[in-house]
Image 1 (tube, one colour):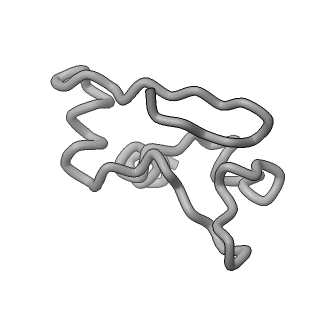
Image 2: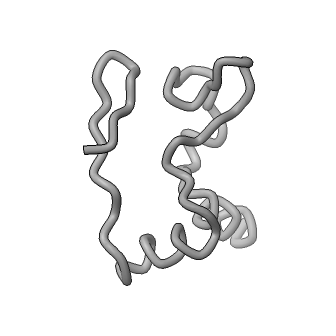
Image 3: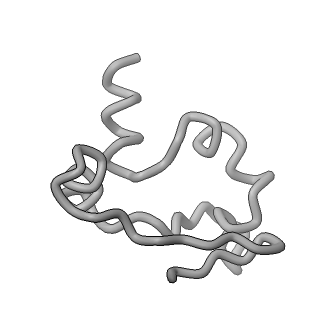
Length: 68
């Protein structure tokens, strides 16, 4: 279980999103596969999680995610 949480931290995704990604249009790419628009890479995701850098501001409206 802890390894799965670390894996999610590094991917910048919640448990709910990891399990139910098909239900969220912002996590489904044009090809129907998983695509996380918030993934900044392993290092930046970890730094953001531990508040060493500022998170990207996001806005989700009608399933469309925009970085503000």
